[in-house]
Image 1 (cartoon, rainbow over the protein chains, first blue to last red):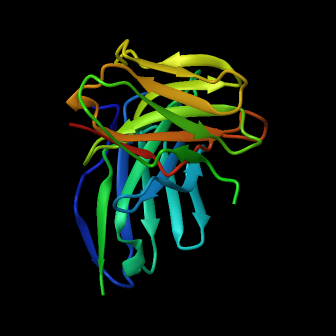
Image 2 (cartoon, rainbow over the protein chains, first blue to last red; image 1 turned 135 degrees about the horizontal axis):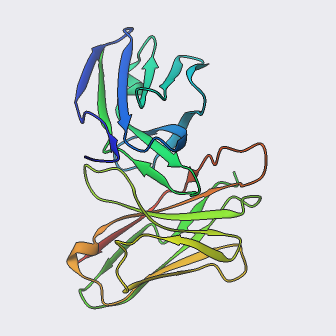
Length: 111
Length: 116
């Protein structure tokens, strides 16, 4: 079992729809959770982080965390073609500074 | 903009040669990380520093890889006797360990290494 798992996709949604990206993790000691966006040929860009159960909203983005189910998700409302990218889920465990990344989910937003 | 910078952005080398990459973190950040990313995969952790101390190194990291951060500012990553399997994007990130912080890491543009 991989430490952080994401469906590689592609996930295709029409412009204006809600895109839902999911991530599961195996280490129950994980403390904080991050979503990065990565355009082709570019480096990852931090878009959100969450550390407590529940929802965290920032503009069109909502991160959701359920530690009991070891599940993190990212919702993108009113999806735009410019949101088309790979979304990486990353997890930080206790007593370490490193992030463990999933393989990423490719999102395609069609006009 | 005082984001993370990396040099060079691209490096092509022949198998068996040594290469060195440099990373300059965000100025107020005391933690610096190196990751490696291959096509279709997420970044893979290599090592990280807090100030000048190397706190963790991946068990998967070959002895051919070495990293330094001598004055707690910039860092270098050296790969000796490169192999074709070393071809990847090498990413540097930095973060602050101060409070409040959840260790948000910000990435540089990366160095793309191609080993022929």
